[in-house]
Image (tube, rainbow, N blue to C red; front, side, top):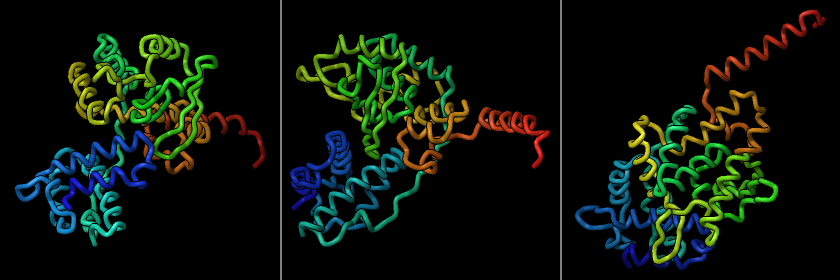
Length: 302
């Protein structure tokens, strides 16, 4: 059995079918990237399952690293899960993707300025081609949510009567219920008038075979990079940074950790920290509050 045949069997397995539909699409994308990778002059898809070694897996991983650590780690993680299925079924004795350690990604600290967000959105809303990307970005920024969840958002997640977003996050299955601003609700209402004949709030705007589908992660990133270049914005910016940007703004506004967690869906304060950035504004806010407290208690015996 070659690895392409293993992929077909894995996609028919209960392990795969129990995954959320969004996760299934992401798995297929990353598995296809893995299969098309050349190792020792031949694509991984043609390699035998039983003889694909850790050395070969490592070489494939090094190729993926050229696209970035996060990209490489995603492919490696999904490939590892497929091979775990192969181990359980007796198709392979070992898991080649467990024989080496993936590189760790350092916590990013990049945030957007409000002007950068405005510049990006203004460019998106100038054309039909980028408008749905702009809506995904605006929702991710305003609600401090992952762009991955926003690209998969359905009209059924939105209560237009009460102006509330009801979302089960894909990563931790946390449920969040968030208010929708008047401006955003107006945009979403208009979006429903134009795209309400199908389920996705902001699909890829060009239908294939008369069917609209959500942006893939790769296409979303690629189109966003194109808009960033059109705007002349710094190359270090990523739309995934918008969740951190919004969370940082909540910290600077003096929002409590419990309130932040109710928005972001995190279950512990420690899990929020990677999305926060220490800024002068948050430090100034903290010290101002402290000084106010000290002055108000000057005459109180301690």
